[in-house]
Length: 144
Length: 144
DNA sequence: CCCAGCTGTAACCATTACTGTTACAGTCAG
DNA sequence: CTGACTGTAACAGTAATGGTTACAGCTGGG
Image 1 (cartoon, each protein chain N blue to C red):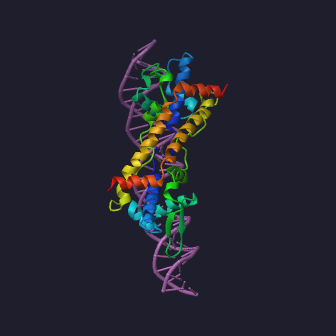
Image 2 (image 1 turned 90 degrees about the vertical axis):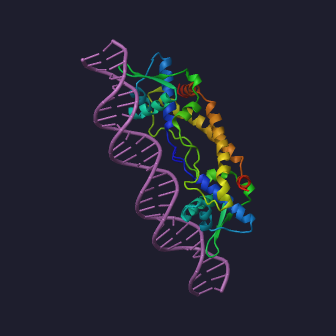
C-alpha cells in the first residue's frame, strides 16, 4: 500500500511539543522538532503546516517564532491528526470503471463502498480512543 | 497513502468467479475476468496468483484452463483477501531512526507500535465480518 | 525602524509503487 | 501434437513520498 510515515511524523512532533510545553518551553522551531525526528526542517514545516490548517497547532512567525499545541494534548486525538494529514481513502476503487454490462461490474462499486465505509469507521473509532497525551505517557513510560 | 486498488480488483474477481460458478460455469479464464473488471488480463493473473498462493482460488493450466474458488464464497472473508494481497502495514514508522537522545525519539516507536497494532486489529475484525458471498449478494441487490 | 531568525512555499531530485502492456516459455486436455 | 491458457519477466508512464536547496515574507526585540 506504499504506506507513508506522515501520521508517525505528525504524532511525534505533537508529542514533542507537548513535552516541551510541560518543561516550560513555550514554542519549538521546526529545526528543534527536526532534531528529534531526525529529518529535514522543511518536512516538519510541511507536516505542522497541515496540522495548523486543521487547527491543532498554533504558529508564530517573525523573530522568536515557533510552534505550540493549540489545545491541551488530552484534547487532541490521533483521529484529529489522521484527518489532518491523510487525504486518500484506505482502499481505492478500480482506476477505470468496470464493465457495466456484467452484473458484478455494475453493482460491485456501491457494494464495496458500503464495506469500505464500515472499515474506515472502525479505524476512526480506534484512532479516536488515543490522545497525544496518551502517546506521550506511553512514550515516557517505555523509556525511563 | 497512495491507496491501491488491489483489494478491490481481487474482491471483484472473486465475486465474479462465485457468480459464474453459481450459473454453472466451472472456471473463468483471466481474459473473462479481465472483461468484467475492464483491465489487462495480466493484471488479473497477477492478482489471482496472489490469491492462489493464499489458497483462496484454484487454477488449472493447459487447455481448458481457468480459475475457480477453492472454497464456498461464504467461507472467504475480505480479511482473507486483504491478507493475501496487502503486504505493508497501515502506517509506516519513521524512515530513519529518530534521535535517541530525545526522550520522545527514544520511546515513540514502541508507543506507536502499540497504537497501530490496535488499529490494524480493528480493521481486521471489520474485514472478517464480510464474505465474498455477502459482497456478491449486495452487488446483485443493488443492480436488479 | 531595522534586522536577525524563523516560517511558508516553490522547485527539484531520487526512490519506490502501481497499473498497464508486450512478449514468451511452460503446461496440458483432447 | 497442438491450441489455449497460465506464469512471469521486462519495460513504460504516472504518481506519491521524503529529502534538499533556495528564497520571499513576517515580526519581536533592540
